[in-house]
Length: 494
Image (cartoon, rainbow, N blue to C red; front, side):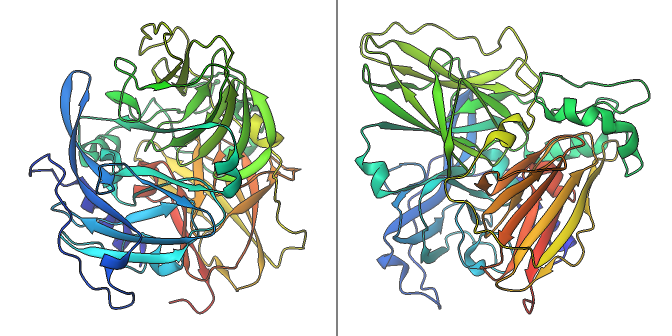
């Protein structure tokens, strides 16, 4: 699949929704030629339509639910991902299992290699689910903008034994405009006066690199003769936590003195957040479903596609405790409220008094994995540069031709962001370890999505143990749609 074919497939999701908003029942199962009958699958998921209320208006969006209406899936580690996916919408679609490492044929990127799921079709997926973690699933088309996403939680035996309450929070950005309209607006006008950046900009911007990657609260910063750092391409109509705004937030009942495990998923298409736990001090124990040495705090950045597991201990006298997602460089926020029985719940404004922090790499530099990659020298190394033209709204990965690996190799990928926007880079089919940040070696986290702030650089290492033609892309939907995507290809894969 070439870039043009991919972009054409991506645009499928932007078609207008013209049918009933009710979530339709699953249609008759279709026999998959390569698997047993889909009727025998352990779990069933249906893609359909539903209606939510946003800012006092009805909005027709997608749903990805089990037969009883439960969104997403919760599975046990060490078992099989055995799922029948049924389409009950009038457009082709496909779902990517973000965070899992399935065989390439079941990854869920249109025509890479599987075809889109057609209306009324059911397809069965069967592969090992893996070792556990907070993951999610979403369309790898523009349909993702219209909430075609859901949690995918894989619980370990230890998770089940712990005396803690699990609270899953899926963040999203919402617009009453279609994804196609949003992309057309981005393509049709320059944004925030930013200018194209190129490799020659690196020397002049070197002095700003530390400031911009430090997450120090700058917003749209510019210096004489330099391009502005652009934080948000789109001002959305609303920012959601589990489909709701702070005008009507989800209130989760919790026990006084209890322990809560937050599973935070940033499913937004173009918005980064900082999770603010307020009066509750938290311990970050996992990123992207992979365990890390605990990091204490009340403020944790999460970019698009990333996940955080945060442990909270509630006071014995209980109370109401907002868990907020602060929009990067802006006053908007979303979130949920944890509340014990009888606690007074106060109204929380959708806009805060201060802008949300600008995401940097401070936390990334501190993360240490529970299970790092085995130490070994690299067999192959690639160097990539992320580039962008804000005026034309074109994004690219320079040096990405020929990312060919062989099975069994240790691969290192050095990525430098020469643009003035941050890019959360996601690799399919693998987990990588962050081994370098801004030129400094680190024994960083194992994860699947890493943020590159403006002018920052990282080095990633992974083992080539899952043959395929795997996307490596920015998880900002509109950056990916306009060119910031390449592939890691195993030798011999067509």
